[in-house]
Length: 67
Image 1 (cartoon, rainbow, N blue to C red):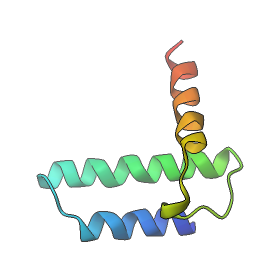
Image 2: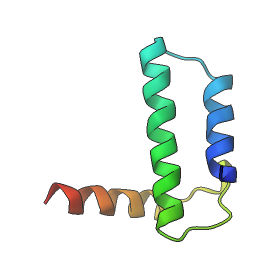
Image 3: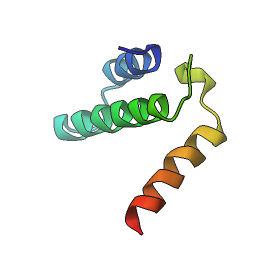
């Protein structure tokens, strides 16, 4: 498990907002995002080091998938 995955999982466990389904969906989505960033070559990421370029990389992929 990558550091980012682990940190995001801990973050979800500390912040239990919403229903159980919402919590599970949030954790699943953050795991997918962390895995996607790792596949795109971003290394040594931490939850507090995420920047707009990382979000742009995720959005770029989703917009290409929709086309």
